Structures are given as C-alpha cells and as structure tokens.
Image (cartoon, rainbow, N blue to C red):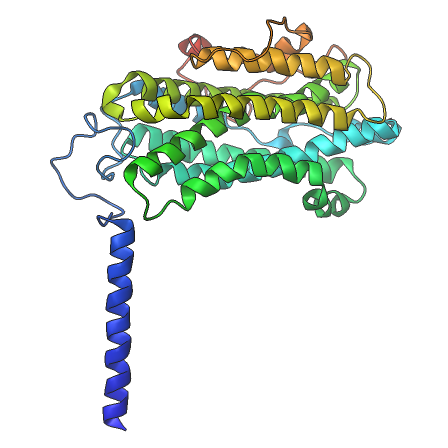
Length: 385
C-alpha cells in the first residue's frame, strides 16, 4: 500500500512539473506582480512589452500628459444619485410607443457596452511598462463601472418593472450583434497567451483602435437620441447623466487618440510595422462601426421618428463623425465630405461644459461630488473630442 501511495505521489509530481514546464513555454519569461529590479528606468522603456512594472511612482514620467489625463479623470468624480429623475418617470409614461422603444433600446445597448469596457480596460495593462498609463487605466475602468451603474440607476428610477428591461438585453439580436463587434478584439488579445510578441502587439493595437472607435463613434446615435429628448423637454434628468458620461468618454477618446498617435510616430515603441500592416483593417473597422451605427438608427426609428431627429439625419451625422475621428488619427476619411447635420448637439457633446436643456431650472456641473481640479480645459485643446 505504501509503495502504491508513493507511486501515485510521484506520478502527480511529474505531471505537475510537466504542466509547469508547458505553462512556462507558453508564457515565456516569467512575470512578477512587482519587478524588484532597481535599475529599470521606466522613462526609457516602451509603453508596452518592456520591463514589468515595479513602484507606482509619479515623480517622473516618459509621457507626462497621461498622468494629466489621470488627474483630470479623478477630478471629475460623480454619481448618478446627484441627478433627480422624478420628472423622467412621469415623462416616460407620456411618451409614444416608438419613443419608448428608442429610449429603452439605447439604454440596453449602452449598459452592455459599458459592461464590456469596465471589464476589458484592465486587460490593457497586462503587457504595460508605463506607470502613468497604468494609473489612468485604473481610473478609466472605475468610471466605466460608474457609467454602467448610472444606466442601472436610470432604469430603476424610470421603469415600473426594471427587471424586465435587464432580463431582455441579451435576447436582443441587434444589441448582441453590435457588442460582438467590440468584444472580438478584446477576446483575441486576452486569448493571445503563448503567441509571439509581434502577434500580441498586433492584437493589442487592434484592441486599442477598437476602443477608440467605441469611445468616438459607437455611442453617438444613442447619445444624440437622449439629447433630442431633452431638447424637446422630455427625460431631462437622463440627459444630464448622459452628458456626464459623454464628458468622460471625451477624455477616454482623447487618451486613445494620443496613445495611438504616440505609438505611430515614436519608432522606439515598436509599433510602426504593425500599424502599417493593419491600416487596411483599421479602415474597415471604422467603416463597419459607422455602418452598424447607421443600421442601429434605422432599427430605432423603424416605427416612427421623434421631433427634430430621424434615421436619415443620424446616418449623415455618423458619416460626418467617422470622417472627423479618422482625420485625427492621420487616416483618409472614407465618406464624402459632409457638414454636421445636427449642430445643436455640439453644446451637449463638447468637453467644455455640461449643457442644460432650455426647460431646465437646475444647473449642474461636471465637478459635482469632486474636488476642484488643478487643470483647466485648455490643457486638452489639442485633442478632438
């Protein structure tokens, strides 16, 4: 019996050793949660695929602007409870069936996308070698969770049976289809264990581009509908929350624009070949996102329009917006030159201030629930929000 137990133990030990060797072959060099090498200078390391991080020290930076993004995000802290939705509950009861469909469908889509974002952002740091970007990503993920929670807060305060809204989200084929277009890039990056650094670099780059497209394009049909309701004196509390979310998304968009452009222009980041190789794919990503948003507009307005907004206007707006986002990244626009067909939306989407509908008497600001920022908005004037 003792010999049998010893034999089983040896077999398990050998199996564990073989498994560990297999894992080491897949992962390559072992990484530690804290790099204890005191000689690493992270101001000279590439942003990704350099040395693993050690101290979270913020006294010197390779890219100081990313730490400014971090501070600006922290100084914008807010919670949805600070917005009164009592009038929205009454407004919703008075809306037409097609208006209710538009409002509810957008909420469902938004909550699922921000669920993806809050869970996905931390994966960007797995191959990160830059502490200031690590700091921003930590704050970014938290704010995406605030956004998801805000949609829950709206649903719980507007609908008589909130569970019916939540329970049907993953059964909506249109919402799931659009979400998969985003998650596939995250999934490819997350599941790239054991692949070469070049393959992982490519999948990381495509994920960053997908996030940029999400922050800059994929929310804007939904945002436009929310603001149009408020322009018409309806669902004004909802529009306040959406405008706060929109301002956060502007910051996230500016961050991804800056990061993608830095990876493109700085040879020592090691992304030049990948970026050149991926350009045709990136152009298609923009095209697909714009087309999906235009299809979403058709879906939302299939049973009727709302005052001041319809599917055709939104489709022109998506072409305009896509062209603008591509130009910032040095890409040739894919649609014909077009002017913004809904200029009034700029007052809502601008990062310079939070818009209030003409009917509102209560004035809100972006700094509710936060400390006063030591940054001013001009610090980010170079970014296209």
